[in-house]
Length: 166
Image 1 (cartoon, one colour):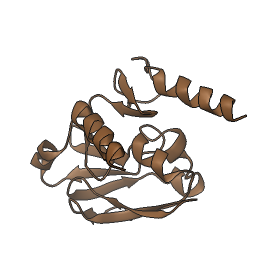
Image 2 (cartoon, rainbow, N blue to C red):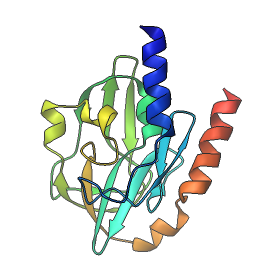
Image 3 (cartoon, rainbow, N blue to C red):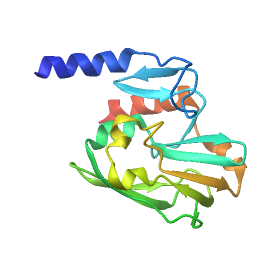
């Protein structure tokens, strides 16, 4: 059983997603490292949240790396729509079988949509952190905040260094 789980994790970690995707959130390909996927075309915070900025909307969630370290997510607390979020301030929490962790907003703005599916199916964060497991959509109040976030290569290196330190 353990060997089957390891083989499944390894197979999932080594695959590259195709440019044909079931969701508009998926970029053309991803970089896989240490059993976690880091997608091209997204921005990443050192607190392990991702941002996909399209036009006047930024979609935010937690990274594959973060969900992997959390373990099975059993509850998600998210803000109300029409509220606001501030860069590097908590906007919610993720409770897993291991711990409860605050979610920090990588940017400031107005919350225009909340992923209501997560209240009924918080495990979407584990199974699909970049697609079905997104958390909030924000209208950025200061789009230049995106420039301070990491790209995929920088985030991959950040995670590798962080994991090596632990």
